Length: 296
Ligand code: NDP
Image (cartoon, rainbow, N blue to C red; front, side, top):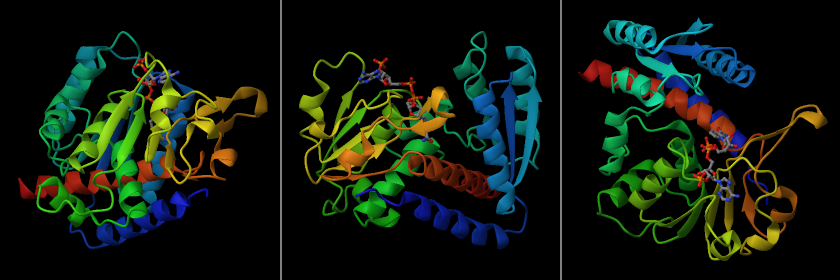
């Protein structure tokens, strides 16, 4: 079956809108974009539009080009600005700018992408309750809903108090080990009691691993990497990949042979699967950043 994760993302955004209505001050996200990558421009426009649709103020600082020092100076200015609650530097940055150095300049409580070393270290140490990257956070939300687990149940599992959840003990195969999806996701899955196998471009026989999985999560960016004969009947497949077919009017597809896999397993669609949930989790992180700053 093809899962309807889009409706769940829309409901999450509606719930966040109710939270925004009750706040005493308006949350404010500032997005920094460098260069004119057309895909990034579309993502940034979507992020701003969705923020504004639920009452979050969103400001874009667009530099045609920039130097590392200038960018870091701008981030320090935003760190000190109490009216800015979230700072996001749109990836990819031009190759001459050291991305991690730039992410590390963002104050950890304003780091809504969760890419700063401080927030990565917090996740590494087993705490998933802070500002964590949106895509893996969204995938975990899809998994909680699929296995009917609330966030509180998940936290108990994470604290070692309750090992009886439906998600704990499952075997997940994560394909891709990037710092924005595969690695943080693997940590979050481990914290939820899942047995995790991580595959990547040097993995020798991908199908051997995927056929053993209860959950397959593919974050590669290669069309039809996962065929239906690589999936165990009854498994859950989360397709994170985004592939754009220029020759087909920029038609989007994921990493998986969705229609054939859907006859034997449950799968999230592309477009309309992980993508909308990632945006919902960005908004959730902006509200979390706003809350964390009120507490400090
Ligand atoms: P990266 O390019 O950073 O990482 C890709 C990963 O795939 C690498 O770890 C690479 O291995 C691995 N890989 C490459 N080829 C193979 C192969 N043949 N078999 C197994 N593994 C392979 O990508 P990202 O993590 O940034 O993104 C992955 C995909 O997810 C992209 O299509 C991206 O557009 C999409 N995406 C979607 C989002 C959404 O909101 N829906 C958000 C973020 C990303 P190695 O490390 O060995 O090179």
